[in-house]
Image 1 (tube, helix red, strand yellow):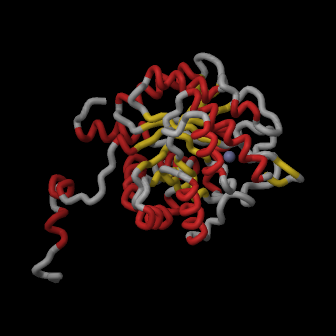
Image 2: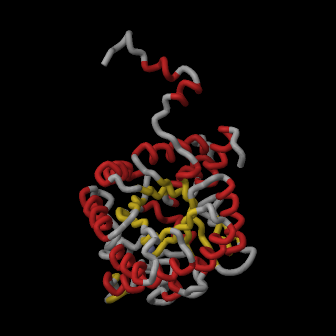
Length: 331
Ligand SMILES: [Zn+2]
């Protein structure tokens, strides 16, 4: 490699057009997925305090957000449900007329170009707020698998394009794959939250999804932040069980995990930039301590550069709008 002064890296950084020409990583609206929180009712649009710009909405309002996402060319949406009633086993999670199921049907009718992904977990539906069925105060893995399969099937019946289990129970991918195949949904893909870390960055989400555990925490099933070899075992296990796509969550503090999963598996990788990552940027921008738009784009391109094909982010609509403006495209 030539060295200074024959090689001057600054030559290619001189103008915006030169920088654009040699840019190594691209970010487009098609790679962005917007999480949406849906509840029952009509005309409901309830802001989430710790996530400026994010709302819980009823299905009719959610369709408006989804239409905008479709116009902006976004890849898809990820649905979370807030049920009217919660119980110990989360039975509203497999109600064929629950908020998520109704939302899926409405979206497949109104926004056919958006990929509709549904989060499959119990914490939104259990009165104790844990991601599964409790036994002696701990989440019972195998009993939880049964209810997860019921929930996944209910989403598939409603027409979900992709099923995304986020509970971190052992064996959930094979259990859900088997249930889907057995009911005629062999073509419904599974996006597995394979490496989901127990993170301090989920706080604002729990307000949005009303899923804070009543006691204890989720360290008994979500992964320890320090472990990348264990993350790779989880990923390989989920691929063997039939996962079609792999998710790493959160994104920003785990870019090395994203990179290794992509390099070692070659599978489509989704990274979830979670509520706390979003809230930190929003809060600092509100105080004018950082340039919010610039840090937003930097955080998203960083996740792509690490190797994520898909970025799930609360910034999806804002980033897609900004990209449409700067490229002069419609939207
Ligand atoms: Zn959960």
